[in-house]
Picture 1 (cartoon, rainbow, N blue to C red):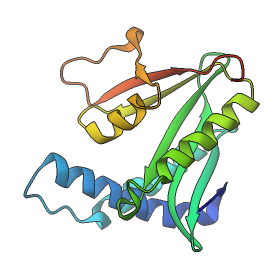
Picture 2 (picture 1 turned 180 degrees about the vertical axis):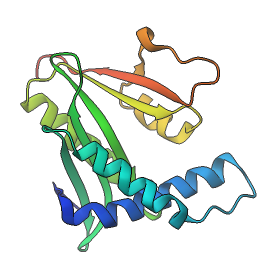
Picture 3 (picture 1 turned 90 degrees about the vertical axis):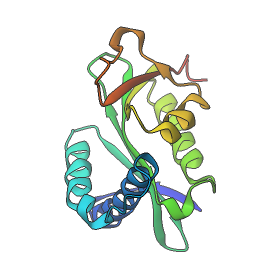
Length: 164
């Protein structure tokens, strides 16, 4: 597997894998449902275009055998020294194979190199798989942004320390 910078040419394959991941999440959340990944594809493409629109947004792609199997996008947050993980998705066919871990580790290296001291992200409240993934890597709910009972997202934070 290779982690490389991503760009405009990666938007379509990334939107496809994002849509597959979202459909898998929907099936897990709503047993018996059979969501079509194509219904999420245009929304995924819009989400990635929006995430990449920031002047300092960076995309990373995970590739296996020339195929994009995961991607992450990060950019600065409103607070100085803080970075936001805007997107991180892995094609469900590659879940549990280290793709998400490798993308997360690449993000951490970039954040440390840039001198960031903290990171934030929003995760879907009901996405237990994603929440467990981030918790295992030291992310925790932001006490300053506790969700309302009907909130769809949970904000997580990660202290990055002094470059290490």
